[in-house]
Image (tube, rainbow, N blue to C red; front, side, top):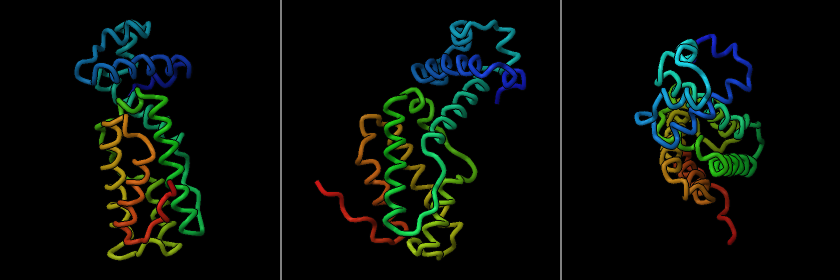
Length: 194
């Protein structure tokens, strides 16, 4: 992650450096992107760059973290619901917002593609807890395991969809709903009308 001096830069300067780096990593990939070209285009010296980052891997980590934060901001927090229909609606609307974001910001999609998330996911944990409270999700064999399995479905679909930008449409959210309904053994929402 960036060194403390990077965090002390003005927000617009940090955003500018990350935008240049995001474009390079999205276009060239992490391994082929040139740290020297990135910092030159960002208008910072090599000395300054090493005051901000430990190297290209550190800069890439900062770009991924920034893209993830931007993406999570689009998704928003899970809002507690009281019915199955409300839960499915919020889930589909969130998936649609993410698909639209990745369509408008393909560099975010490109740098996040193939990145493994680690640790818990508060949005998914809240979704599962809410689903259990309203009776959509059975708490057996354990709500923690259901949350891990649900995260696995999201991760698998994210990996698949992020690698296929042309498939970021309504079918991705339909597929997510189908997989989760099967995992949770829930009937799922009614089929969309054509």
